[in-house]
Amino acid sequence: MALDGPPGSGTLYTALALATAIGKKVAAIDTQRGKASVYADTFPFDMCPPLSYFSPETLITALAHCADQGYDTVVISTLSQFWNGPGGVREKAVRAGKRGATSGWNEVRPLEWRMLDALMGYPGHVFVTVRDRLDYVSEPDEYGNQRRRVIALGPSWRDGLEYEFDIVATMHHPHTLVVTKAPTADLAGAVEPEPGAAFAARIKAYLDQGAPIEPVDDLVTEALLPGLTFEELGDLMNRVRLRQAEGYPLLLPDNTGTTLGAYITQRGNELRAADR
Image 1 (tube, rainbow, N blue to C red):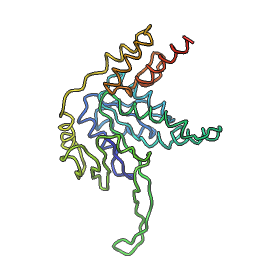
Image 2: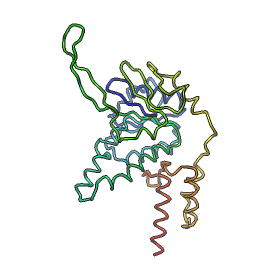
Image 3: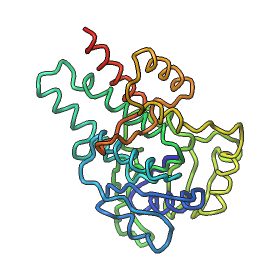
């Protein structure tokens, strides 16, 4: 689920309220200098060390740590930093262009998709907050005095990212959630003032529909086995793709993060190079 909104609309508070109502073990990945810790006495969640550098690799590793520790729900506040913050996708594209790459975006786009694969492949629920692009207008109040009002111009992230999320909602003042994308008639177009446990129960009802999803743990265990042949890695990759688990965030023994699909591909490439 993605929540966007202007400052003060309550995106982080709402994300934590919904995440802790749905999840049993919740972690918060904070990009706002520890802002989520303000709510440590309000909601039951664990704070990951606050981040100050927002490269795609940083988010992949953070998600891999959360998966390794068994968090069934993760809150990321805010996802916008990984798009236009220090070390984010846009900054990487600019730097690649300055190094002489034909197109900085051609170099960075695969890494961006790998980050999104890790986000969407997380073995649990993920709630992200997104900053809005802002403008200001001057309007007269009831006394005729001019006052500034903030206007939200839409979420600050890459175009089309809404398609990747099950539920997308915008927070409006005063702390009212409006669903702009949802998979069920019950949730689509919902308007919920100060959403909490009752609205989370509606999301949970959607999540409980359909067939259970097979755990990926066995595939991960097999991928980490030493001595796999190129053919065995190829068979494993086919099964991972059938399970749609290429984006599963994987923590390596050296404490760096990658995705299950990227790790299998890397091992296969290493074996192929060794045979030449």
